[in-house]
Image 1 (cartoon, rainbow, N blue to C red):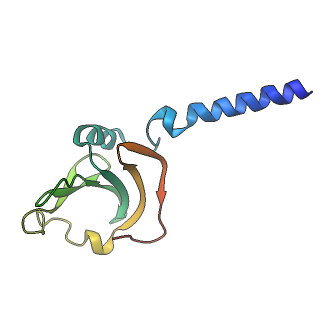
Image 2: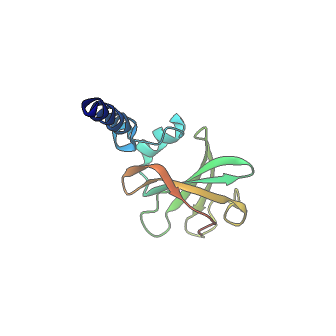
Image 3: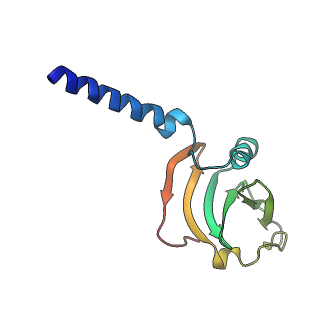
Length: 124
């Protein structure tokens, strides 16, 4: 009986290891276009938001003065650029920081966050 319990525990633990974020390398609910953009752009962080009833992704690619950060749809289409020399970006999605709801951080400091960093309010 004791041996059976040990075997069941070992199988359960190994199952958790194979489904962990470290093993997979990314959250399972992030679209391929977003994953490809992360690999291409190598942002500092990527936050998932709810904006106009759609999930969108804010890429912090800021590396210094006058740089931009970018907003992408789930399909990987650039929706807006923020920042730049004037600080106004490209003028699209001007209400984003006033109306979007941050859901979680999915990528930060060179690694995927398996379940994301959950937030309870906007953190602008």
